[in-house]
Length: 232
Ligand SMILES: *Cc1c(COP(=O)(O)O)cnc(C)c1O
Image 1 (cartoon, rainbow, N blue to C red):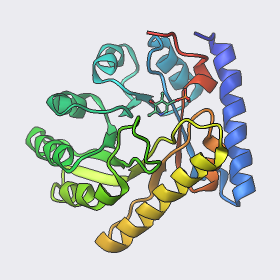
Image 2 (cartoon, rainbow, N blue to C red):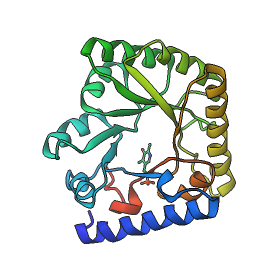
Image 3 (cartoon, helix red, strand yellow):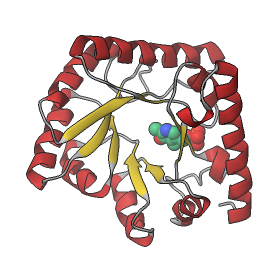
Image 4 (cartoon, rainbow, N blue to C red):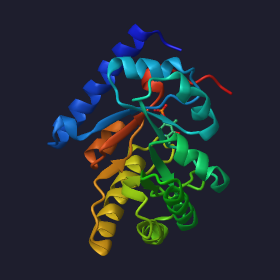
């Protein structure tokens, strides 16, 4: 783990990359938010992010967030960015402010139903495997309308956009293709369902520039902020 001063320096550098990418794309610098990904790191990572003034952190496991969140300031928001098993839907709704990884119509319906029962309204993103990567979660591009349709039946689930992870590749064109496919998917869903889906969560430490160029509004950054993750 890095020290706070190292983290703050890395954070400035990442924010600089985001500003540069926005500038290059002719976008407003505040149109992209930085979501620090604290998974596998001690709770200090989340405390650093909060101290720096970032409003939210991303975690990929329900159990891990469950342990860390009580040790962090209450106003820090937690976003789930990892695959959610349906038997953890209730815990996820209780512990996370945003669920970025809704990847099936069944999960969307389950989350919507349980959120309603709990009297909660939760923001959600549909995770789409727009890079067609067999190693990644996310619904197929063709299945995205069915997932959105399932979610729209539940007022307790507010779908604000889409999320994708680019396949690992040495060819930068692969990330660009993945991100542009997600944006097109979003545009088609907005037209077909007459809804607004402003959030595009795409881009990580290694590929945030092409993501911003393709319209990302949320980059999820781990290693560029906190260093390499300890291998489990
Ligand atoms: C781990 C993770 C990230 C951050 O990856 P880095 O390459 O460390 O920036 C972003 N998104 C998701 C879904 C992740 O699981």
